[in-house]
Image (cartoon, rainbow, N blue to C red; front, side, top):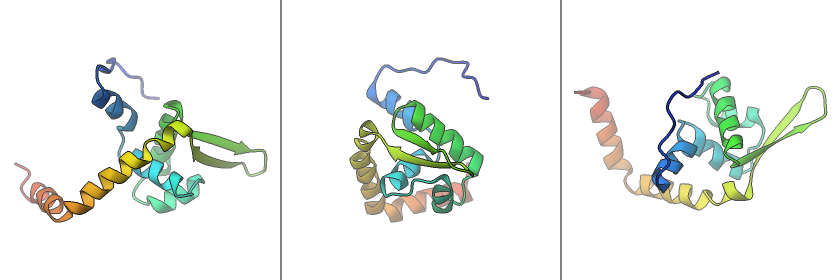
Length: 121
């Protein structure tokens, strides 16, 4: 397992948010869990580009940061469901606002990103 060698800088809110939400799929995971997609297989279907391993790691980190809870049902095969904590629910309006900004600036952002892919200088 990955062991952090450098202590993160936690001197301001942006540093703290970066520490908690750093990870390619975390914002999407929080959004989809809030929409009711709670089983790991459902989340995998919603984010097919992510490997199951990466999703599990990021779900574990979200759990460690107390944004989601994991419930394991005592059945065979084991059934696992994730849900947002009250603390995690406070992030949903922020994520919604980020999505709104992305939608409003979609054409410009897409152009900038594609330009970087074609001319990575």
